[in-house]
Image (cartoon, rainbow, N blue to C red; front, top):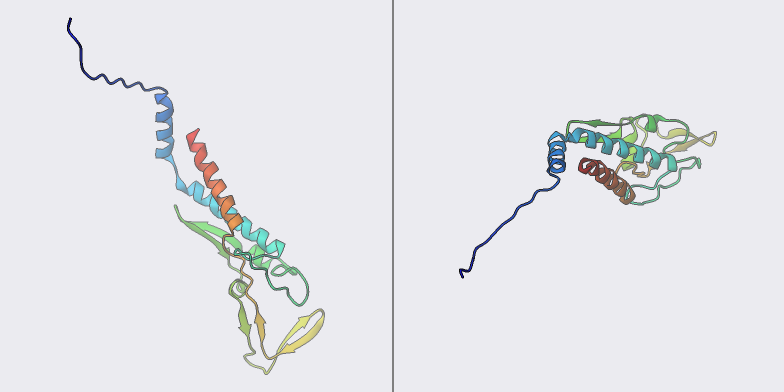
Length: 163
């Protein structure tokens, strides 16, 4: 009686069409759609932060203003109306084009240029000062909560490719 020795390898491929479909979706993946979704979400998160009166993305509370109105949105939509995003293929950015947006984001000290004092209305009366310090009220950025929302958006978006 002869004994048989050797190696046998069996390869069985199941659901090959699912794999082909997935590879096809990956090949056609356009990151522009994902980028625009992230940018739109980032702009909306910034808009909510301004309307809520803060806090900054790092959790720092915004200092209150003298008039007691919602900081960065007391009377109009100048800052909100200037929020926008733009994309360039696989990258993009969001921000504010309002001319004084950077002052709110970074803070500033304002001194008179052509007079001895600054004059400005506070609660319906005129106030005067040698200088005014506008505190930093950072509104642009990604908070920990924002990052979780962006992560969920990316996970859902890429998850759709697996279906």
